[in-house]
Length: 206
Image (cartoon, rainbow, N blue to C red; front, side, top):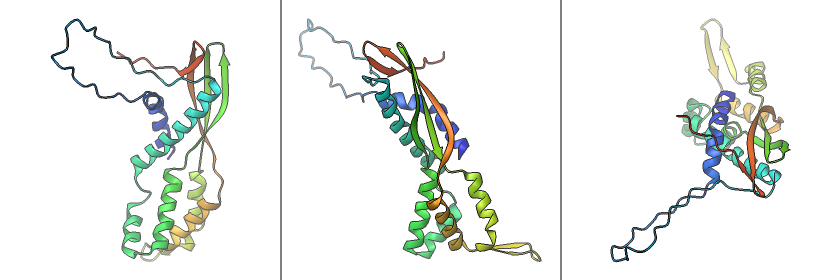
């Protein structure tokens, strides 16, 4: 999941700038009957969203970053385990299906983004965002340490029989009762123009 997060962070600033720009409205073609003398108005360039204070900008961007991170994670992975999806669907147990869906949501949409530090230096500034999520190494260790609760190992036949319902319940209970940890930080640069703050646009590489 961390690899997914880092991939999202790399592309996040561009996505944030796209989110902050107003959507373009369709321009209706002018009728030919209009006079030629009418002055042509140049189309306005999309403007990046501006804020009265850097703190206000930081709070707004934290919300956007959290939405982008969780949406991107869900879209890239879709599910934790396709085989478990098939089992749950075949069982037709609504309570089990709800637990599995909640487990998917807790892991695939686990990121919490908050403002860690706001640095203002005259007309320039930057905001450090703190990203929290689950310690997935600890989750893996927990599942391995409790393997006997959902798996039967036949060493003679080298076979493992998994009780998927027990596996779902074990993972669900763990995630429902464990606290999230700090997993990454991300810094976004801002600039003050006039009396308003906006994110620094990265120039496209030629």
